Length: 319
Image (cartoon, rainbow, N blue to C red; front, side, top):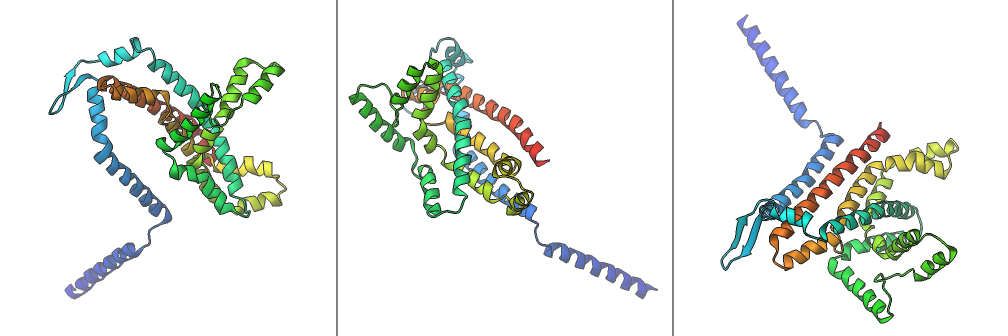
């Protein structure tokens, strides 16, 4: 009896060991690999945030409640409460105005850049000669883009307009179109809006490189079988776009919209960013830090609102 019991125990142990080996040898699923890759990218961001951005953000938060003075050996801070914030809202004549200017610019830039990027990505996804060169051409601004580069281009355009005694500082000017619209009797506000958008064609194209790449990657993940079935059912290209392409691109659209919002607010010529930069140059670290904190909160709230609204439509499309 004891021998039989011992054999049974050994058999159970062997089965348990085999099951453990089978579990260990079981390959990782695609979802697990994707999750692991995502955690890897997030880990890089977390490391960069902790070692590069965390300390400056904490110091900015402290400086926003302090009067900051530069000493010989170190920075001296004196706690003054909400005085910097009160000054910004009650005495600063430019900050609130610059905030509304940045918001108005963002409101028309985001949809225009998103639509333009989706259109260009759809074209670049087609097969034609020179497709690789065209893709590189549209993504080139992302590679060489910097505040210095585009500022040099803008200053070149500014020097040209100064020599011709015009007010516009854009590289492409729409004065002829403005005169034509005025002669036809359009509303002055409508004319200013249209010409402002056209004048910024260079900037819009320059800012669309990342979004085009994202939309292009999204288009390439849509199974071709969807389009084959729809063509067999007699669907037109217009119907395929609204029934297949657009719904499948909604998650990418959410990413592009959030990226464009942040890029618009942090662009080098944003009036709020320029004001914060001037305050730092004037050694007004407390005021500059307070303005930065307020601006960061506004961006965060706006991104959350967009995520809540757009993410609902993304979830509906997926369901």
